[in-house]
Image (cartoon, rainbow, N blue to C red; front, side, top):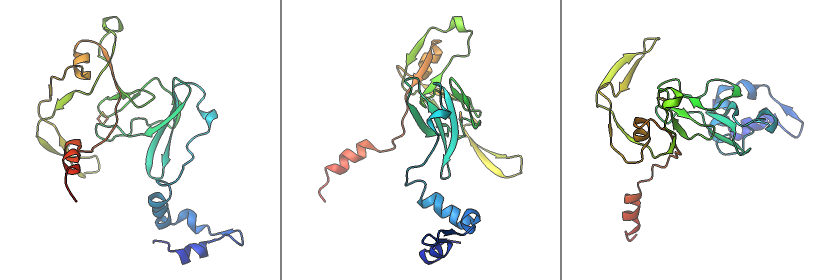
Length: 205
Ligand code: FES
């Protein structure tokens, strides 16, 4: 159920210092909190002492969103969504620990402690040519949509069951891996259509 102001005043009688136990167990109140409170307010994630060394990490939540918090190499602390940019799988499953990189268990995309995508060729160490800073390449997934069933028998669809190809993009991570380099790609997500934005700005309103 959704709690309105009158109901909240009954549940939390702050003048008398009384809080109903209901607020800890009511699913409606929990949902309202995850929608209205946690995404909009500062959230406590970790104490500084939990992340002593670069690479130390803790996983937690901001409301319903899973978050990965890690000590960086420069000593700062960074937090990022614990969600793979490929298909959204949780990149880190442990509650806490130490890691040099975080590898998504689904298809193996790997991120460093700052959330940058890192690719390492599947070669013996001495065959690796070095490290390159790269841009993302373009993978081309076939348009085959495969219907599958999960272990509970529910239907889901798998995209890209057809042969996977890539477009040649100079300076890309794919090119680096092809040439036996480790690639590091800083990433950010901004879906703004800048061409449309430029066109719209010329309109007279
Ligand atoms: S979902 Fe993470 S690698 Fe595919």
